[in-house]
Structures are given as C-alpha cells and as structure tokens.
Image 1 (cartoon, one colour):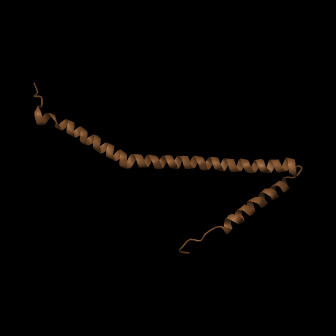
Image 2 (tube, helix red, strand yellow):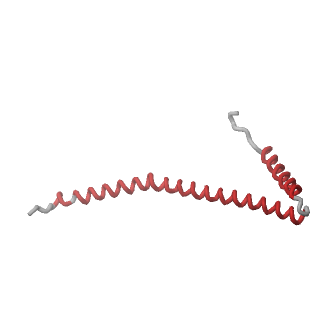
Image 3 (cartoon, helix red, strand yellow):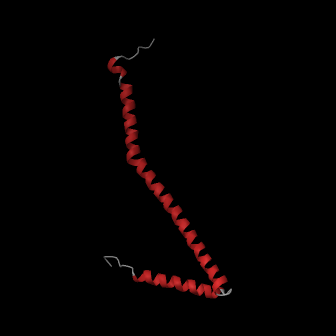
Length: 104
C-alpha cells in the first residue's frame, strides 16, 4: 500500500496549483484582457463605420428622391446638380480647413 504524504510533503501540490493559478491569472490580466478590449473596440468601430456609410448613402438617395419628386418635377439631373454642388461646397470648406504636417 502506498504511503500518504504528511506534513511538508502534503503542501507542495497546493503550492504548485496556487503558482499555476497565479501565473494564468497574471497572463490573463496582462495579455488577454487588453487584447479583448482592442478586438472589441475594433469590431464596434467597423460596425459603426459600416452603419454610418449605409446611412450616408440612404440619406443621399432620400435627398435626391425628394428633390426629384417635389422640387424639380422629375428632372433628376437638377437634383444631382444641387446635391453635387452642396457636397462640393462642403468638401471645399473642409479642404480649406486642413493643416499641413509639421515636418512638411
């Protein structure tokens, strides 16, 4: 019959398990948690960007459709000119606000 460990011999398995648990918790806190936060932020950013792009396209279609039907009597070219001109003016305003890089 095998001899059961007593005294100091009985504590080493508990110490080894505690050491393994502390190591795994440390790795989780220092590596896994930050990577999880970065991945979560990246996914939410991609989803938010995709939603913003879809809403922008739908908004442009809505504006052109409303102008086409109610303002210009089914003259799509006029609606396109108004929306294109508006987007050009906004783009030029943003272009004039740009800053050059410090080193350039």
